[in-house]
Structures are given as C-alpha cells and as structure tokens.
Length: 304
Image (cartoon, rainbow, N blue to C red; front, top):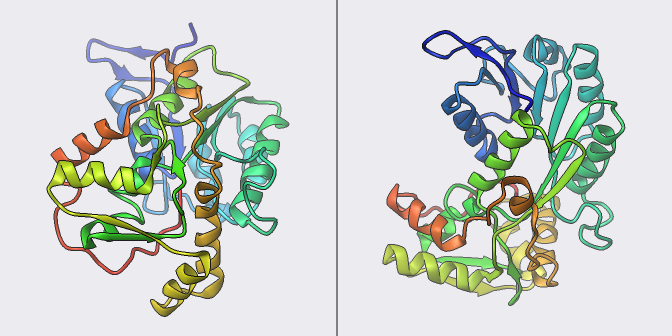
C-alpha cells in the first residue's frame, strides 16, 4: 500500500506536506482537518496561509508547492490557471494531483456556452489528464452545505428560498464525503486515473430539502419557484451585476431541467460505503447550530 511515512513514538510527521489549495473553503478545510487527524503533514493553500498562495499571483505558487509531492487542486473559477499551475507543480517535483471539478463537465447542454466556470473545469480536467502525473478527478454535484454555509443559508434564515429551480431535484452531496474521497485519493493506492462523480444517495427537490431543515430546526422555511427572468431581476434589484445574476440563474438551470437528479456511484467506488444522506447532514448541521441567528437578504457567494 502506498503510504506516507511517519516516525517517532508520537507519530511526528516526516513526510512531505500535502498542499491543499482552497484550504479554507467548504471542501478544503475538511480535507485539511482529516489529514491532520491522520497525522499527515499538510500545507494550507490560501491567501492567508503561510506561505501565502494566491491563484492570481503566480509568484506565490513556488513557495506553496515547495517540497510537496501531492496536491489537492480547487481551481480558480472563471480563469484557465489550472494548466500552468499543474505544469509548474510537475517541474517542482509534485507526483500526484487530485482535482476538484464539477458535475456535468462531459454532459452536452449542462452548462451554457459562455459558462466561465464550466470552461475552467473542462480545461482543468484536460490539463490534469495530460500532465504526466498520477491524477484523480472529483466531480461533485450540488453541495448539501450550500444550505448551511453557502449562498442558500441567508435565505434559510430569512424563511424563504427563491430560486429558478422549478420542481426539479438534485442529489445533494455532503462535503464531508467529498473530503473523504479526496483524502483517500491523496494518500492511498487504487485511485490513480479515476474520475469519481459524487452525489448523495437520493434526489430531493428544493422544497423537500427545506422541509427536512424545517422539521429539524423548528424554523419554517419555504421554497418559492421563480422564472429565470424574475430571479435575475430580483438579484439586480438587490445590487448584483446583471452578468453575475445571469450566471447564478444558469447554474441553477440544470436542476430545473432534471439534469442533477441522478445518483452517482463515486462515493461507493472510492470509499466502499454509500454516501451520507441529506437528512444526516441536516441533523449534524442542526446540532452545531448552523441555522441559528438572523437572515440577511442574500449572500453573494457563487454556486458550488
């Protein structure tokens, strides 16, 4: 088995550090925590990290990559930076990369022709597959944590989530599962050359997901479906730039069109167990107070 060595009675880490870009985000922070629990040396790649890592400043890349042999890549959405980053990583001795991509990359019509995030993933996947390094690609669907940490949370707290999702459903994936698969791909044999599409075990409509949150928290949260035009107009009225509002509406469109409801087998294949159910995510999030506090009009995060 391919392992990263430790030595000493205390299990002191002697292996090269694993670089986790996006190391403070929904997935990256969970990967960092899991690696630390396994006594792995880890380097958090972020603008607040030491050394500092900034996707848009290539002069910061070398220090972050120095000494690393394995890297988890959260791409910089909207820009084609994964390819030059992987090229530089290889030059500096990196041997294995695990890329966070997205569902629908290889599905015609999933994303719009001008979808910048989609282009980032398409180019990033090609860069990783052709780089000559050991690679694994993760393609998660919609994160369950969008309801508790991301751009749905403010609406949940306010009691109403308004989206152009129609009556479509999504097989929301728990970020803990994404992190578990990433850690396995970074530290174990058997995952090189694999593309894992990750989802939860069942599809839920937005209304069904909110009903589970309402039941667990005692907080009434309703879903109001909008047309794409109504949704864009609402965001613009709240101060969003129209192109950003349009991108958000486009990101939700696959749910409305029934393209996010299928269940994928990536978690089972990678970990040998089924994925966590959305109800389990809700139970855990409620226990840690994820939905305590007051709502704001809307978080301006990007969909994930």
